[in-house]
Length: 500
Image (cartoon, rainbow, N blue to C red; front, side, top):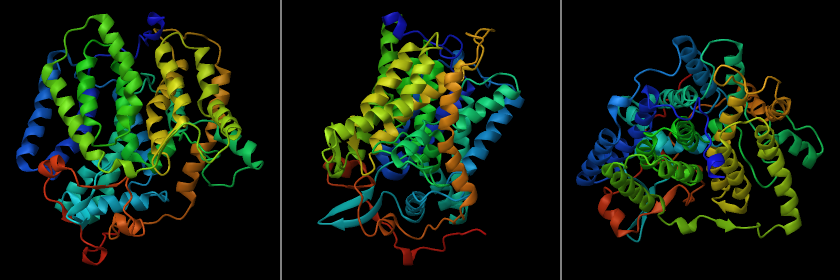
């Protein structure tokens, strides 16, 4: 049983750390250093910055790193161009019609640009209400806009998004030669989704109106990769990168130390990365224990513990104000829940997982954990739109997508099976309607330009949403953080830097 669970992809899951791994680590690390410098008092900022930098230097065996890219130049260029084109359809850059959630994203970026850090929205009874959740994605663009002008904010955020998307796509197991197979599999990634169309047809009895969103046909939702990128790149990009790196390296003896660095860098980006990755990291821990690899670097262990503890205290400020439920939703009858749950699990991931299980000759543990995670998450709810379901599901969905890529490619010089996996093809083809509607909305609906004048609170109609704003009422956080500064209101801000 253990042997089957630890079976790995011999071609793609035991890769040594390489230039792409280090570039991705640097991408994830940069917002952490910005956060330390901008949010912590200077003694603590220096301490945590040196701690993380030293752990990166000590934990990795730099002599064993392969300083080459995983693909040759034509393939790399194709993947990078595809990543930036894909990103252009999202909200960063506002080249097309951004989703409505980008009003909030732009407000957060504007507050980080116009306000001093930590950003405070009010002080009541001596307690500041500060911006605290999922801000890592915005920090590099905010720093650049602070230095060079708000007019560069949108472009900077697009370039940052495109870079993260490119790093993610470069880490996937694509063909090493340029050709039609590469282009098809690139398309597969951008169009990867569950079969929402069938759910809409079953529940609504009519063809969905274009270009509406298909993914909320029941009380649950697992987003397509396109929707993840277009609606919530601040959560999506770090989880994509960590998940793809996990699949690339989890069977390599150097991965455990690298994984410690990863888990320390993720919380400043999003609080949902570690819960989603935890089952897969546990599998890697079992592999590490049974393989008898060398001991973990002590400094990396200490760094991970201290940084995660810091971010846990920061991110859980007044966490009790965020709505949470466990089990069947109390407003729905058990039979309604069961019917909705069964149809959702079959259409969103069950059919694809079954089709993959008939084809795979490796990674059984990955497939089992992905399916089990996706099956359990609907029984939990956290956040106003059930952010836990939407975000913690991403690692499992990425694993299913990667396993799908491997099914369509030769392994070790010959395909595992020579017949076409038609069941997988049919599932993917039906699922492609969801991202197609997302691309269609971005391309056909009238675009709107970013406005960084309204604050987050303005966009929330004067409310202080607990999933973005925390009460700084903990003594340890008051000691560690700089004194919060009230963010300038709309009337105090300079022009938003709109571009034609």
